[in-house]
Length: 274
Ligand code: AMP
Ligand code: ZN
Ligand code: FE
Ligand code: FE
Image (cartoon, rainbow, N blue to C red; front, side, top):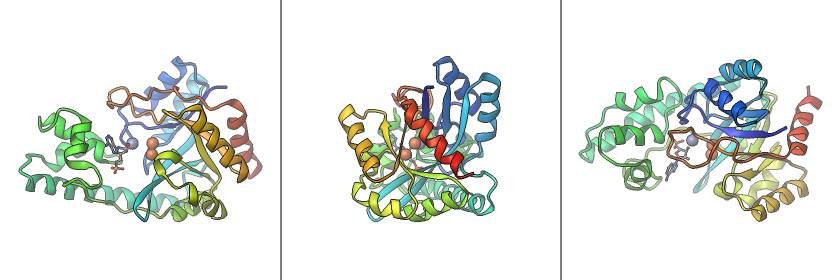
């Protein structure tokens, strides 16, 4: 069993469609994956169907962007009920806010004398969760910048001149939402989220795991988070955070493989509660 439990598709800011991702995963020898699009479950049906066809187990997943004072914390969710009404209502609210935010960001860019239209961005996200990477790609298409990195450095990073926030849950709200939908909430890429001191408190609120295996983590970092998870009675998860072959990112699909014992523990947790 080889599993990659953190992957983005065109249903958020990845560049490969869900069925293509499952195909690539099968070719790469993965037997299990979770699609974890930002604030969206739109790709799950397609991925699950393709997984059935190709013999790849697809675990339902999502990555919720949350805000805590001075930082963004990403919470992954696994094995939730994708039809739970409250869950769907919140996702809809976040997506609407993301579209409004793109409009405001384009206005800010226009006021910086950059020729860009809202449609140039929304065509790229194609009705799915639009994010800053879509703005970056639109800026490249318009010849305004040469790379995604340049777009973020000059305009889009949190302190950049074109940054606009969107509606976000608090970490605890995201954890409660995923639990209410029957899912298991997991702290994503803990080094980036930079909130180790919150783990004990988040566990009390229902946090179920920590993503100890992640692209670029040294064995020592992974070991540290595995210990932290085990000391706190939390599951261990992991994944590549693959964003697609044309995303400009280097992390490859399946480049992070979660050891079988942890995949089994996650599955058991799910099975025990249902
Ligand atoms: P959003 O959720 O729309 O605010 O966009 C966040 C996405 O932008 C995440 O997938 C990040 O990985 C990506 N991102 C954030 N900062 C950078 C950066 N400096 N360079 C490239 N991508 C970035
Ligand atoms: Zn992303
Ligand atoms: Fe993330
Ligand atoms: Fe991610």
